[in-house]
Image 1 (spheres, rainbow, N blue to C red):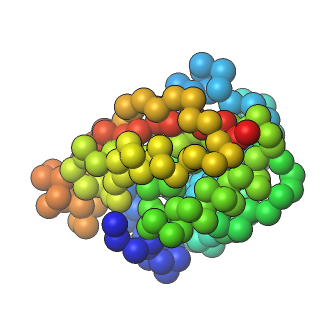
Image 2 (cartoon, rainbow, N blue to C red):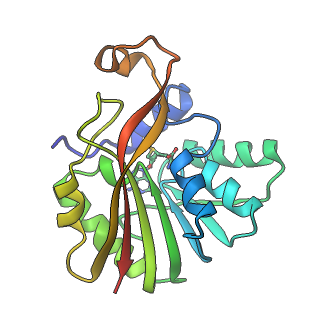
Length: 209
Ligand SMILES: C[S@@+](CC[C@H](N)C(=O)[O-])C[C@H]1O[C@@H](n2cnc3c(N)ncnc32)[C@H](O)[C@@H]1O
């Protein structure tokens, strides 16, 4: 497992507009989760990036906060929301130190879990535990180790082993994560820069006990 990527690496991806996960729309798997009734306020969109999920859920009437530790991500998310005419809330904050307030009913993690190394993953899951209400649900959409390398990838066991004490893993399904190939991924994925790809992913539903 590679070390957790640095803050500067993420900031740089936003500044240079080379983030393969910025696709200008919400992930299909998250859209589907909402349609299926799996989102309840208050919602935390953790590692919100360009803000598509916070924007979608705010527009649909949910009480949602998008957080990201990269100031450039939050700036881009705010611009994105303004351009779409949605009064969405974003803050710069670290997912590894979420604190205990205000008690989220739903956490949407789209492509954050998979970036952490083993030590940070354990810290992240402990941080999520403090942020969720008892009975709250975390949805994890993570790139799968069956993929071609659009980004960091995790195995089914990585997810199962992360959510043990204090959690119940209610569902773990295969899904897709949509991305846009950039220079850095073109060789691994075997497609030209700018290609849209649907990569194999895991979609987990985990309940905080
Ligand atoms: C792969 S991107 C996914 C962005 C977005 N959720 C999406 O699916 O388009 C991961 C995001 O998590 C953010 N991130 C990484 N580590 C973080 C941390 N410790 N706390 C908060 N955000 C973090 C990065 O800045 C980046 O925006």
